Image (cartoon, rainbow, N blue to C red; front, side, top):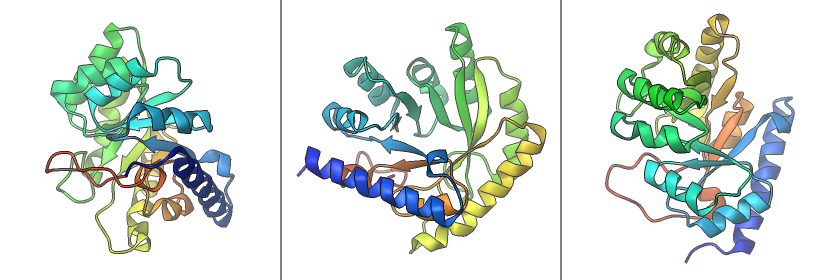
Length: 239
């Protein structure tokens, strides 16, 4: 059964409290952590609920769903994030609909995204997706600095940070070393590009650990909207 408005509101309250607690444990201001509501397969109505409750960042995994949401909810005061695998074939759709693209990796897709945005007179904030597993989309950590060089040379995009989905671990604590590695990699890239500040890491099961290690964006879906039906057979881990 889909989550009710009461359920979603209650979940959001608990998530905000957990974000506050995790930030305070790390000696951080909770306001420096941006909650991105991951709305894969979520209908427009629950999306509107969380926006009414103050969420200002909405993350989509699929280009078509992102476009459909913007058309269905044109008046929402939000930033639309693309958090799915960025592919060359759909990069133009993402460029038209997203405000932030968190999953820049391959050169071909990056160039298509930037080219479309530039031709449309847009500048998209982007993050480089770093893959520590060798089996997902994104770039391996050793290629992140070179990818930063590529992205910063493109018109139509503005490099803001790094993003990762850590390898699957049995506990949230098991993800901590990967979050530390991403933070250290961000710091390395930042020495060349000082505006690279963002760390998008942490999902429903491990976002508190990610915040303790410096996350500035957490992508939360299941903990907010409840379990959602799978789509296809090769899913990225649900936020």
